[in-house]
Length: 97
Image (cartoon, rainbow, N blue to C red; front, side, top):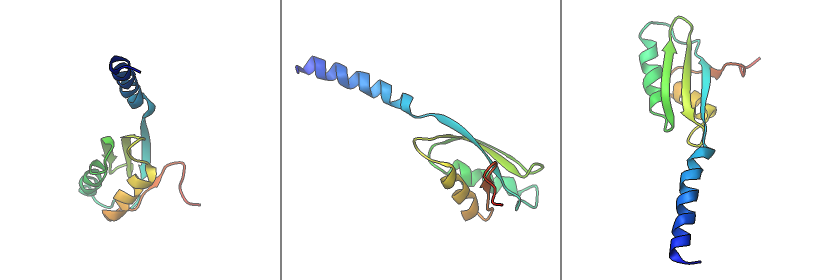
């Protein structure tokens, strides 16, 4: 295969690969938030996870809504981040019974 064809194939593949990743949203239940300042710590912990693009934390609802790139992180990493910050969480719909 000549150099031009190799380069063309590389460019096609390089532009197609990001399409394999998808932004996902997870809602985390965080019942241990006990004061209006707690969401600041939770948000910082979640923002530090590679692949997280948006975090909205609600003290009133005791939850965080996180948008993330599923090729870079997952829900387990998100719950670990909040737990490591002192606020254990579970993905809504996956609460322990």
